[in-house]
Image (cartoon, rainbow, N blue to C red; front, side, top):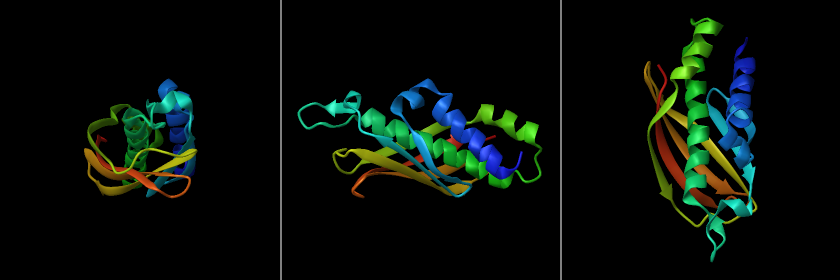
Length: 151
């Protein structure tokens, strides 16, 4: 499996094999070892404040955690040049969120949303990522930092 195939496998794992993420309707629009973008459309099921019709904070944080986790895998893959395919795929089982912070900047209004992530640092055991959420108009709704166990 080459790098592109692994990223495609991981994208499918996160969007199609995880029932919660599938319910969110996540679509991977960009996935490289140094950037991830995931989009999703508004659903009334996502309402966190019915008076304002804004995203529930749990949806915002969950989607940012997804792109952060995917970015952590990209960081793992970039560092795993010497690792064989089986060892790398087995290491995906150790991936997990250690800590995540979400800063809610504006109400989550919009018809569609894009969450993105980039690497801050990747080590042998821990990866740190920066995540953002914007609506279709480019309004910056939230940002966050995630720390992920990668080894």
